[in-house]
Length: 365
Image (cartoon, rainbow, N blue to C red; front, top):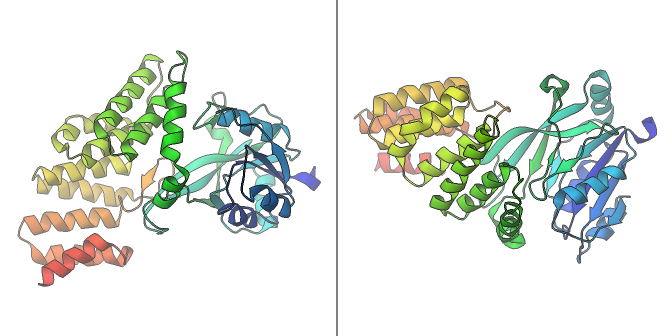
């Protein structure tokens, strides 16, 4: 088995821009590469073959899980690593990587997923979260859902999932990438088809809400988000923290601050250590002119920090963004010294923080 300890399993279509970087990042780390190609017309297949990958052609049938499961069926490794073409694995020594796995008595590992957003790669414009991406082969793990597919981990004890301190960098949601690939159009079509199935997962409404949110169609996004929460509750399941993150992000982004304050404390009761929820509350308090309450809430954000990988966390909610909003509060309260001090502190953490720089420039005029 040591001859094939880790298999990289991927599905690919027209990924010549990102695929070389992805495969280069796992050279020497994985023992085989399985690529299920769903109809590439660019050089993706040749690139994969150049890295020694086994290429399996699969006619696209609008089902991501089906394609991923084909890759699993062809994997010979004792362990399976899942990556997308627009992701790269952080550099790690092969011996250290394999030793860590062998010494851990678990079946599944989560890795830190770093999602970049905005117009360019910026280490401070990210969302982070732990995601299960490495698991033992031949234990019956399969993907399900035709889109936004997930591994069937329902019967897995959470104590049998261990965090592997390695980062995966994901570039697929940078603005230029989503526009070029027309991801929104593809996803919307598949999701609307999926929800016609009476037995569809309540996650599908969440993903639809996310797509409408990215389109800035906040009213529709909010409706689908609430419908997802409702369907989780009907099924006797606690709605994921992701749903409450999206719900209050929609309200804050659309300027519905009073509406956000009506219910966010209930969400915080469910997830008291989720810094993003406290941050959305603070932003709403600021815009409602409740500066003292806002400052105290932001202090709590700073105490929580933004490194809790149990949640999808936006960079800065427990650091520079909280300092920025505290600065704005002190500005409104007529305290220019604290205002400037906090802005400078935010810039120490994130020197390219444009909002803070602009505030300082306006302050000095």
